[in-house]
Image 1: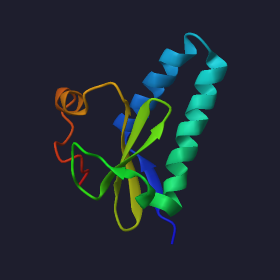
Image 2: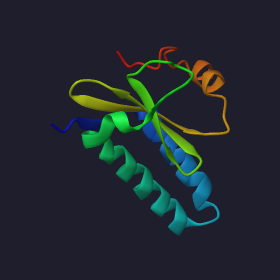
Image 3: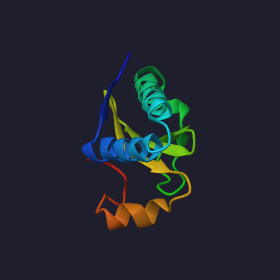
Image 4: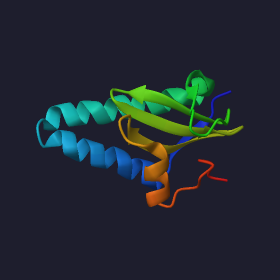
Length: 109
């Protein structure tokens, strides 16, 4: 059974910010990067458990995939996969989460 894939507003904003940064050097590469990220997220409808458990959360429902140097952080529920973050791999996940007031559990619910 396929799950629905939903991007949180903050995760979509994360992706747009990364794309804007890349577009300064190459609008073409930025567009390809967004397509790659969206395709990776869409693939989670059928393969949600394929990503690794996010070490910072140690929760089997909070997982991640990598798109280039970025972490697609997502929460798996019975019928929906929520994309909850799109973060550069060099960034400190906890520091970013706390500064932006995101839930410490990573969970949306």
